[in-house]
Length: 117
Ligand SMILES: [Zn+2]
Picture (cartoon, rainbow, N blue to C red):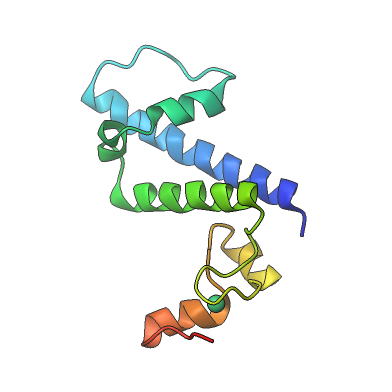
């Protein structure tokens, strides 16, 4: 698994969501500082509740999952299922790069008690 490619993909997606967020925020208050090249820094600073309130619930949830995925990448257990500890299928990670569950745990969550070992 090419974790650097995954990280780049997650960061791109996060940037997209934050761009949407800054649009939402501009409606709430006069926003004068444009996004700079130092985007990653700003993203950290912007993660206040106030900012997150300005974006839609779904974007907020996705951002949360992306943040969690980036933390898992940093910690080196990105590919392990958070529920059962088994490796998450590569195809699944490709489809849902911020998932923290293997396919059977995710399915179990939808259709009843979680699959556990
Ligand atoms: Zn699992």
